[in-house]
Length: 325
Image (tube, rainbow, N blue to C red):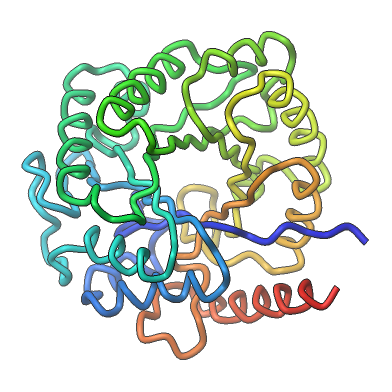
């Protein structure tokens, strides 16, 4: 029987950027105190995850912006009960031996991906934030690397402006600390062309890890299709000889219309099929996401859909069964 890889990490957020999607946890998370944020990190450790990817260190909408640390760029999040959430999660992650990828976004309106990649003013704000984040929190052993959240579709191949964006940010990241890892999680996995041209782009892309979205939660792919996508990517990454191949596995469904309704937990039978398809090809599986979609029974930091407790139980059963084999 094929061994399925466990989920080794998750995206993490203080507020979900798409408001309808975050219906079941955004209001609750604004009221979390320090101990509840610590509890959330301990929950993630309890299911044997190793990595946390912070979605955003600041969040910009058309009509307002907020930061989750003293950025000096945007005001600290209004009505946010915990005054130092980034410091808190880094501190607790260090205690739990977890590694955090720190977000370099969003320092422009989060829906304006192309402008965020190319606008010099956004870049200046992001680089200033990176310096402040490293100055404030770089001493934590849990500060493992950087995540570039302005995702772009790989429409056959990488957009040249996206390659430039990644390489500029990585050059700056390395100037701050050459040892921090870098991560991107692009979409378009179902339409990219993993040929020699794609390999040549991988060779030029200065990033340590690419966690490709499996796009099942957003209804662009099905588990019986993704094995072929990741098999082709495995061959391309092996040929390029750089950038680890990870998966960004979507463990959600939409309550209604795609992108316009709440995220809810997927059934674990579907998630097992997702793991079955990608496990032979990827180095590491991350998921989107623990927040709101998993909750440990009895947690003091409950947030999310009612089915989230069952998903936690189902996943723990899977882990325990896997250890018996």
